Length: 339
Image (cartoon, rainbow, N blue to C red; front, side, top):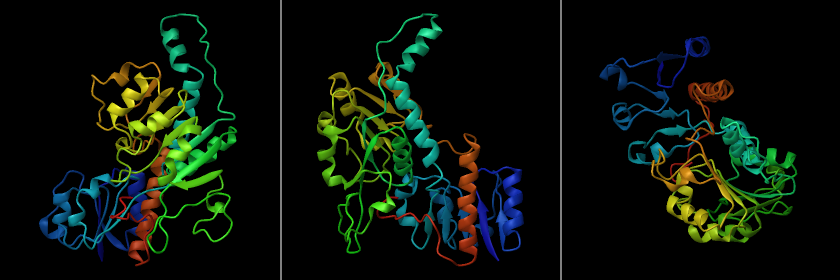
């Protein structure tokens, strides 16, 4: 009987679901801070959660790790110990809630809600001569995965034109350019991305930046995405454009973003992720009126949002069924691509 260790946070209800659904098919181990014998670790077949490098090395029979995050940054740094192990994530669990974060924060900036909140605390009745609408804006979304598609879907309801930038590999490994208007032999058809008015690859990013009112980053951390929004590219944006980052902090170097904001190269920024986290206390970003900062909370999981938490476990349990039935796993992370 296969042995599966549950490192992810789970309450009594989830435990009961796991026991009822899989108790007769595998042995479930819940360490909960207790030490697991070396002999048992050596016979472990799978882990749900985020094991450390030392734990992986102690499990020579390990064949599957199901992480409860969408990003697999941690495991890109330990690819050398993942030989023969399939890594899966929970991509698809966070798109809805992160899209709502983007919509809410952009509207808050457009309607000067942060200023009104400050006035409220001071008991000051003062109108801000600042009211911008989403309607008619152009959004450039960097990343067309689950999060990017969810953002595009919701922006379309507000009358926003959407363009998506992605990296797509063809069958021979070459990057292909896809346009939503393309109906011929493109590897990806527009019907797969119905909420994007345009689609293109990252090598054409500079062509889209000058027309975008919103530039929204929701890309994974890879060598290709590090510093993608460079100082030069930030300078290509409209002086009143908003830069939003809900993907990974490596997308833009803090120094470049600070310079661009201080020089008026863009209208403002909404930042949930940063190059260095926590954001250093002495960062100028904290004191900029046109910057909204949150501490990496756009996609809360365990303890943050029940719906997201339920979706995470649905994905994990569905993959557990596949694993125990020796069927192909879903949400497999490409260790070379980084996501």
